[in-house]
Each structure stands twice: as C-alpha cells, then as structure tokens.
Image (cartoon, rainbow over all chains, first blue to last red; front, side, top):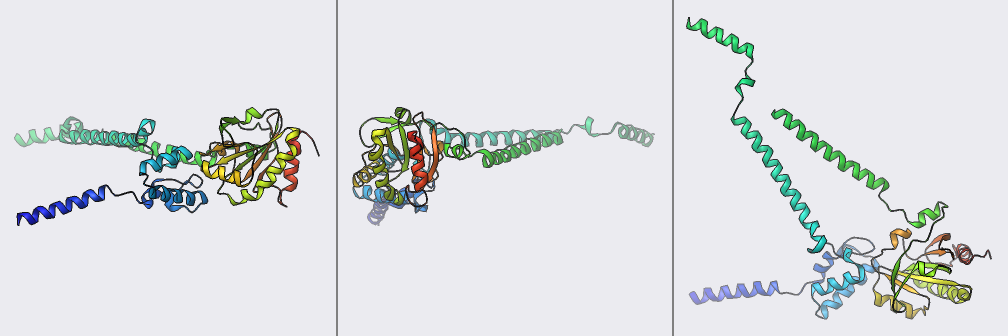
Length: 147
Length: 189
C-alpha cells in the first residue's frame, strides 16, 4: 500500500515538473508581445507585421529558442515597446512598484482615518455633546426632585 | 469633528476625480503629437525633423542633417507593405535620374525586421541609402500616418511640396511627386 502511495506521489511530482519545464507555446508568446504598428497584442492582431512576427516566433520555437531569447531578439528589432508588460528591472521596475506603493499608501491612509473615527466614537466628548441650557434645566429639575 | 474630516475627505476625492477628468480631456484634445506633415499641410515653413539611424545598405549611421546641401526624397516604407513594392522601381529610377544633380532618395524602413528589409532591397535592386527605424521613432515627428509615405526636403533642409500618402507616381499623385522633386532640387520644371 505504501509503495503504491509513493508511486502515485512520484507520478504527480513528475507531471508537475514536466509541466513546469514545458516549452512555451506560440500563443503564450503572442499574448505577451505587441504589434508595433497597431499596438495590440499579437494574438489579437492581423496586421502584416504581426503575421510576420508570429511566423518568426514559430520558427524560432521550432529551432529550440527559449521564450526569453525570442523576446530579446524582438526587442532588439522593435524596442522595449514590443513587450506587453514592462521589464521587471531598471527604470521599468517603477511601473510595477508604483501602483503597489500607491495601493499601500492608500490602505494606510484609509486605515488611519478609520482608526481616528473609531477612537473618537469610543470617547464621546460629553462637554461638547450636552447643551449648557439643557444641563442647567436638568440640574434644576434634579434639585427640585431631591427637595 | 467627524463631519469635518468626512467633508475634507470628500473634497479631496472630488478634486482627484476632477483632476483625472481634466487630464483625460486635455489628452484627447491636445495630446496628439503634431508631426511635420501636419505643419506642412497648414502651409508653414517646416524644417525636416532630425534623426540619425543605422544604415541598412552599408555600415554606419546616417541622418537627415548629413544630407544638407542635397535635395532629398524621404520615403517611409516596410518590407511587409504591399504598395511599397509598387513604388520601389519609381524611387530607384528617380534616384538614378537625378543623383548627378544632387538628389538623394533616402529610405526609412520602419517597424520591420532588418533581414526582411535587406531582402526587399536586394529583390528590388535598391541602391539608394536606407536607414533602419525598427522602433518607429521617426513616425510621430514626421507625422507619418501609414506606409508608404514620401516627403521632399530641399537643399537647406526645409520640407517642400506636399506629403504623398500611398505609393508614388500613380495617376493620383504623379504631378505632386514631380513637383516635389523639382522643389527639392530648387528648380521649377
């Protein structure tokens, strides 16, 4: 029984490893690259240059080129704007970090305001809340009641 | 106090939304880069926008400023552009016909693979200088709206004549092409 379980785990692990190392498909790359004339991703473009780029991608994949190699080659021809996502290095890293930083700052701001509100609600300022005239009448009534 | 904080928060949110809306309106109304072709169409004196790019016909770089003193026919093209095939022989003939009078045809290959562009040049026997602009960095400055497109630059570096959209020397623009060449050369033939 233990042997069977070990075999099953080994099969699953092998399948996961095989999936992780699988060669990129042309459609994966086409969704990550932009047509330089129409500015949409290659998978959504039928422009002549997009068709040519798809052809080059298929040829290079068949030759065994990696995803990164193909992207580098296309960037050397058409510039970094050919990438649908900005690179995660150098100045372009800002495009990834800035939205996260703004989101974090927003969350901190909202949290601080909510905390401030909840604190004020927990400690009501009675002096400000009760009308002095009402307070005077209340004291008078209480005195009359006691008397 | 709470009410005041709320009002300040609402005001900040409203200002933010208004600023974003204003940015959107500005971008739609004025955000488009006005290229040299638009200025030329308004009848203004326009200097040919500068660039320096790698050559495809030989090693090294070439810019429009390097051609001061020459009449230049600037042709934007790409190997994947079908009408560019039709006009290639006309541009080559123009170069051969007027080169002794100081005219240069300068091809700018845009959004293309270098290898494909060189194949196109071999196929059509192109001997005039061609530079490579894979990123399309010249397109906005010149106001190019499609391929092919042709401009004429006189010996002082000013744009002359009119921009020709589409292949040159067809029925529709033969006159404009010949006039552009003549103006670039500094003659009124």
